[in-house]
Length: 75
Image (cartoon, rainbow, N blue to C red; front, top):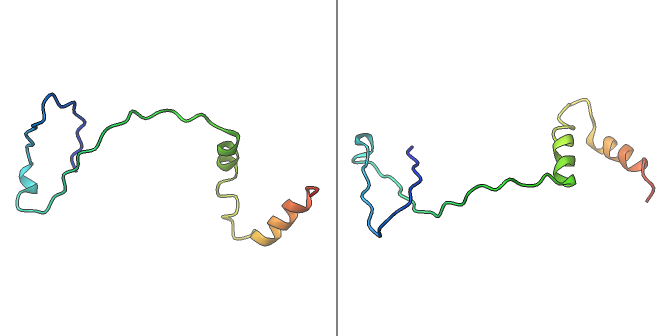
């Protein structure tokens, strides 16, 4: 796979295709590139990161765990 980010100076651009791609079906995409912005870490994302994978242990019954978690709160 080849990925290259360029800033075109004209409407024409010459593309050099590697030899190993000759006579093969290839896909050429032209997409705008957006600079990645840092996402502020919200309370919601923090909760997800702290609880991710908490139920992966086979010793935990998800229904029982959920009932115990809910019984700790007043509704």
